[in-house]
Image (cartoon, rainbow, N blue to C red; front, side, top):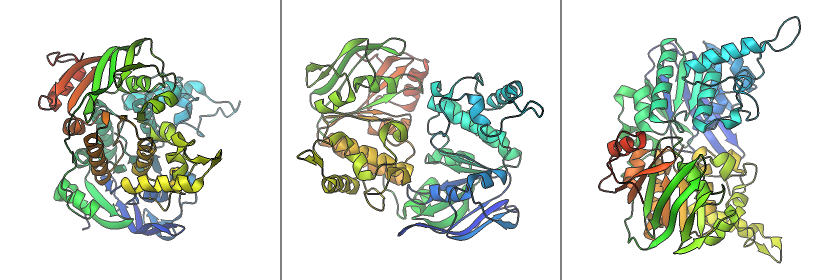
Length: 508
């Protein structure tokens, strides 16, 4: 199965890593050659994140070797890995929100004047402007990160990695929050780095992107090395079969049930400077897909409907009755649930165990005579964990120790446990592998078939097309099109989202 065509710059051989009784990696291997884009594939929980943390110096392996330029080495810290030429761009931005873009990019490495011992701000900002230009960002280096979109934060992370002049660059789900144009721009950067001799590790769940950008693919399953292949010798179906250990019959399994009366109806919603004239309905047993480019206002509408952000006008009806949500708590009591896009900062309390995360909206139900019942919490978490096929040591495990896909399953469990009538899903399969994605789609179909009304925001057009009964399209804070399932195509959706056509009927 070997496919290397040049002498590896960095090798991870027979890596083993265990956490208590859970073996996360067993005989894991990765060989990285200069000027090669090497994709790392596997289901959530397959060991990808653990292997990358070994490579990044976050974890020390229990067994195995790390070989750099032919010499065995040990990374005792992330600083050791960075000094050896390894840069890691994690899936979730790891930036300091209240510091500037420039301060984040050169954190701990600011240029210092030798005489005054002060930061040379002019030199710093000039260097950062050039880095931002290289990744296609027109930002002031002095701008605070807090005000940036998730997509722009991801590109700032790329600029930070470029500043390290790394020999090895790891990109963990770098495209998950990017538009198609931004993805292509990022791929242009990746290709230039490849031409410059950098070894790049690309972790992604969108197989079309993996096959478009990679030269080689290494696959892990259940923490064990499956094999390394030339990308040209592998098909996406074969890759999926190696990842899950079986043929995956369908990624978009959907039970079609009876569509009933409207459960949620919004009319002329408006938030100054954000969105306006938003009117739509979601019916019992229906999945409505909300499409649009990043920044179109989809998430902002969802947050306002759920009571997180205030509205300046319009009305919301549940079961035909006008409701007013001054807080998410009021929305939950009325039967709404909202799974946010950013699971780590908005969906989870990472230090808490799985059981406490799942039951956070249900604390009153988890008490007896005012005293919290941990056994009841664990039982409920286990029920939904089994239903969503959560991979964890136990429900006592902290949420921060889970892979991204399993963290998403905990967020889904938390809101499904409230037994909502209307479920809003914002990028429900972002950062989830194909196996877990199929499970989430199956669950969505079951929920809709049982009578739940689902509003699904997604940037993945195949997901929108396959899972939606109707598709709504937003552009620049307005609903610009509504399409029935049999009318919607990728071309039509993108035309409406980008303003190329207005011939699809404005939602009303």
